[in-house]
Length: 216
Image (cartoon, rainbow, N blue to C red; front, side, top):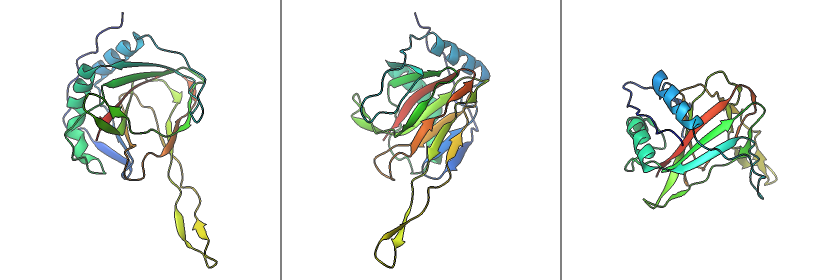
């Protein structure tokens, strides 16, 4: 039997760090050290499914995962996240809400999640679409395993012969999976949608991640 999700408390003075405007933000020390240990123990008590062969158009994912529906866990996390939402851009003006679809990912050494896009998902209870991916890294001692983003290419003005000039891809951005760090990245229907991203191969250690979504 999995253990109960531990008690977690809002933290004063957490800093929201802008990694890429309107797209990527991080918050360190989202869980206290004791909370982090308790949440990791809870995650490790779950029954996880192994990797499946990707369907057409799906990215390869070689780690393990679990998914559970829990409004209780969502509400517990929401109390921590709500004070941070005003620091995000695009501005978050909706009534704060989180998806009750709670996911746990486990990436042992040599596993990864290929390049993909997150899409807005309908929360059936509230009838609201998701807009921000929320990832909380739970484990220390991981080499590799970052979340790497590939910013959208820009299309320039038309050339002399009427053809569009296409600039090269922007430099990729990697968020390292530091234990206790929360990563928020945009996947809403506006603002250009989600950036292409991937979970880099874990070179050593065990990467554990907690996932939910902010609702628009």
